Length: 168
Image: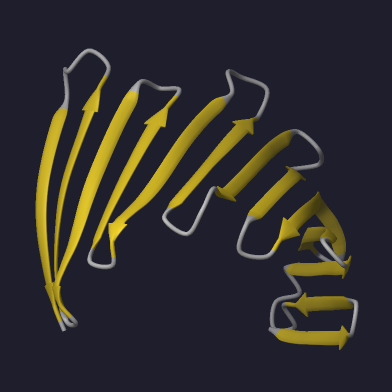
């Protein structure tokens, strides 16, 4: 593969070609100014020097550093959509969400993170599929963390519990 990237102060253009088999080519452009960034991508599948299939995507993002991020993306030739957000309510609480839609029922996820103190973080997540999960991470030392987690469906038919310790 040959990859070429051109970067300017407000834009980046990338192109990639499979030169050994000439089976694919990809290109993307991203540009932004201030709080807004936008981009587009193309992915071509090649067969015998002809374009076998082409997939395009578009996206836009708005951000306020360390406080808010909102993105919207359309992929697969504008047949699949995603919207995401993240909001830092304060230095301890962050909430976020994602909505995916591809012609069927939308999938929704809502998440939150709360830093109880410098050593303890609690995270929770709920999905439109009726799955709820939570985790508590405790830093016992600079290089030793313990995380407990639980996940269950809205009818309690599938309950998962976990405990993880990380050293190093």
